[in-house]
Length: 388
Image 1 (cartoon, rainbow, N blue to C red):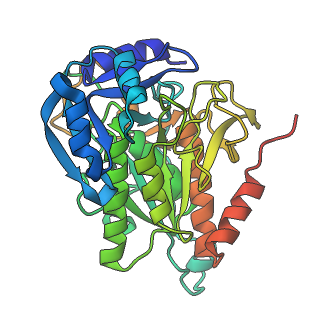
Image 2: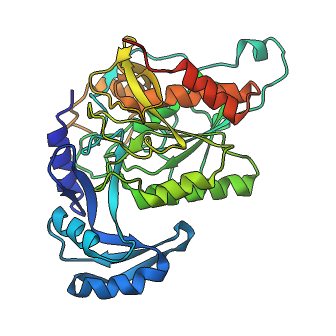
Image 3: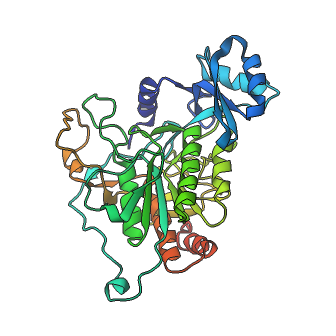
């Protein structure tokens, strides 16, 4: 298994805009040290309250119902949480979002190479000349998708307007594969295998280290909604193999608001996390989201989060799927995984890879004519927690 403490240390070293709030335990969270968010009407009051900590600069995020105020001088996470707690304002820190979270984030292990997998073909009934099914649409907001992978020809996916697309290998140019390079391609592969008739909508919201924040995720959801409105094609399922813990264990309001804005026609599925914890992780713990835990040979995996907020359980150990491929111009002598992974196929473990099983099943049910409520209920029944 991955050493989560070392992972967190590396994330904080390479993303020094983040800082830990609380101890590295059941109370910890990771927040941006350089910004706070409030409703736009409260921005002036927040800048006054910050005094010398105000760095100058307010970003208008009116489409998210927020203003982001730039700050300085917070060297420790407890300074941020103390400041927020003392204010008579609806002010919040901006929490780190990661692929399949521990507070330090990330999958439960490293990918291992496997032989090439045959790309999904049309369903048997479609191949036999049956009427083509309605194509469900599944949005995968993650690290992107691999260039020129044979599983993802142009007719099975499209980019989300306003979001980057490609799953990158080495963005920080240290000649080593980034920690979560291939994460989005792996998610998309599982969805495609479970729902080969579905159309994928792909947008990059995590960098190749698996790092983002709640404002960026909310903004990506807003862009996804705008894309659906522009094209006139509703989004049936959204897979979010990312999450966060919050400093007060309350839901991040911007993400919650954006998810609710999609309405009942869109089913959200999110990874529960890999910390062996019952602490609620968001967005999986939101009432409107199906939080997915990981199974290992039919039993809850040792690494999987659990609790009453986990709604479904699916295979999450050694899941065979697609992976990012090496481009001819890439040089990665510092690989800490088997280089054969870059042929494009791996097995990988984590709740990240359990969630798209459920997302794919819901998409397949929608393609078969089930309503969103029926597809949701069917998935909950099929992927219920195994009994002791």
